[in-house]
Length: 350
Image 1 (cartoon, rainbow, N blue to C red):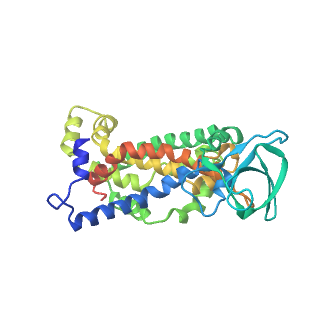
Image 2 (cartoon, rainbow, N blue to C red):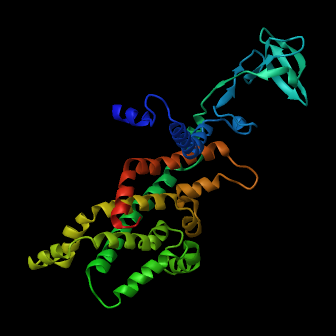
């Protein structure tokens, strides 16, 4: 902690801030606001009520109007402070609003209705966290099913991707066969093709295999990725061939060499690919949107889209579910992000 503070407060000037220090801190502060500002605003907005979300101009903190229960009224009435007119300085409760007129009552005389202009009163508000935005998700929508679908697709697809890509990379890196250069050129060439270009043939193949509208229809098409093969192949090239030859002299099978030697030595690159695969699969929206049609098979990303209707959008539920959707991948990235930089650098992908 002390070293962190010393690093953060380090200056170029001796005892005072140099102009380059001011520029550096301003640049870093701007970068922090640029990166984390939208996320913080999203989290704060997820705790706002629908009325507060519709307010213009928007406010950072979640405010809610204070209410009071009065005798003779079935619902709590919002409180206002009168700022002009005969009731200046008094706290009143609004019964109803008609046009530009507000009908209010005094708290000690709720039976007498007084009409005042809308401009003559200001709402009394307090900071209020609308936790019902999160709790209502579990009653309005099958959140756990969507969460399970996303988790199942992410975990299974990541495991299959690591196995298939590592085996292909092992063959391309350590075996000499005719056509190896052509296969590698095809892998690199596929890297340059956008995913949207292959969506139609991918859809036809998935339909012919009978996997359309199932979770496996989302998992299997992404089992082999050119990025993963290229990443692992570049790392496996750094493994000395002498280690593999020594294992063959000890009568180790090719599968044992792959499973017991190559995979453990490729752990840094596999960790990088696993992290990237988890983020890709968890955030994938386009292909699940095409492959899945039944709501019980939807992932969290597709469920998020269902909150947006043609006429209305449930912003409070949409924002709350967005925060919940971001949490798993944010934790994965926060705890394992150092392996991404070191692993990509070691594979030559930088």
